[in-house]
Length: 272
Image (cartoon, rainbow, N blue to C red; front, side, top):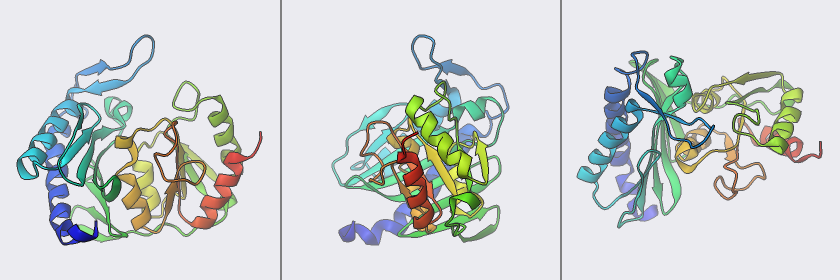
């Protein structure tokens, strides 16, 4: 990234353009009879809406117009390989289940990677008019006309931690061992809340949650989260303390501090 660091401010501005464009597609459909279909096979359920697809089409077109050499990875339309070290990772609606239920915990996720490393991350919640941008070890929060820096809570003790996950059941995103491991952490935490999707990581970045644990995620689900969490002073890895994406299960452990992260890792890895 060092050779191209001068372009980062330009990319930040463009990420905002992308997020604004996504809002134009998603907001008019939210709580307004979205067209929902099931991407999964058999008895599984993986919903996608017309808002997901149209927003990603718009974002891809903007990237291809402004940065034709850049790669693109999106949830709905897969990967377009680029001819440079830069790749945009898109999830126009993270939390489609929340979207189709009218719950404002869904978010638009936009990441920019350099040689496979996320260097810019944006989380946008259009309905509440909130946006988080993490880049170069700094995270900024904006709501309407108010903007400022983000810092995690500083909580170091699991017994004092506010924990979140989207769905810890085997019927959700965890397998049996993961369900049991999460339960061990939840038993030790002060508070546990569910069904926040990417919004939970945004709350962690601004100090309202302390710990988020999930599995079953794909690159588009977490690439944008990494710069946001790290820029706010947090730690984000897989369940073994490795770089996110180095396991096969799509595990994510995000914590407000390294001490809290270390304690949660120990409990997750303990034998039940």
